[in-house]
Length: 208
Image 1 (tube, one colour):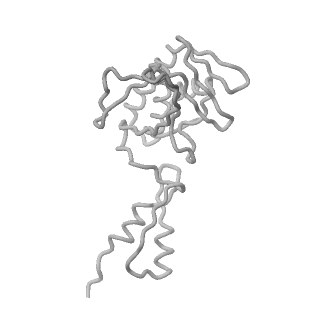
Image 2 (cartoon, one colour; image 1 turned 120 degrees about the vertical axis):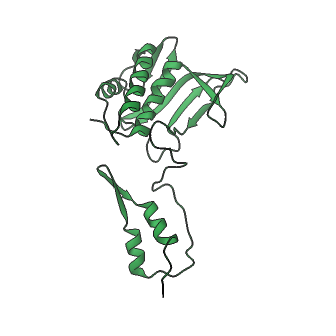
Image 3 (tube, one colour; image 1 turned 180 degrees about the vertical axis):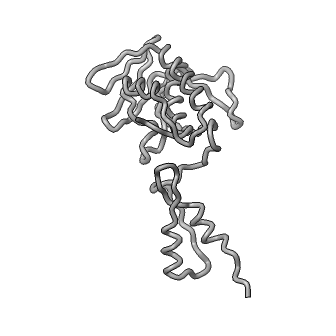
């Protein structure tokens, strides 16, 4: 069973929503839709563990290619599933949760994971038709959901590195203690980045 948080399920919602709408709207810095500026979506590209898949829009049908056979799914199904999933994301109070009805549909369209690979630079890749230039650019986007906790500016991980210079000396034992600080989120354990930063930069001065 697939489980994820609101942000991760939002990536699947975005996929369904875009395929259902068939067009990509532009927005301003306040996340407000810019009226009159729209890109028709030609296809959405997605990489799964079992290969690369292409979701092409043709009239009211989505053609899904990349597997053993080309699948044909009515756009109305993506609209319905997008609305259903959005409601589930909004009402759920758990940190991580499953949506069995959506998982079954995901498997039927060769969508096996909630989020893009951690090595990918974008969360979703879309080929659009630019009506002004008559070009078909491939655009990559990061998905930042506001349906749960406020989204971070960047994703912390092994591919996200910051180098800090410490102005005071720290002994080896303290370095090992700080570098071993971990935090548990659900069933997963990851580096406690906040704790490590606080340990380095927000130490209380010794009182004499």
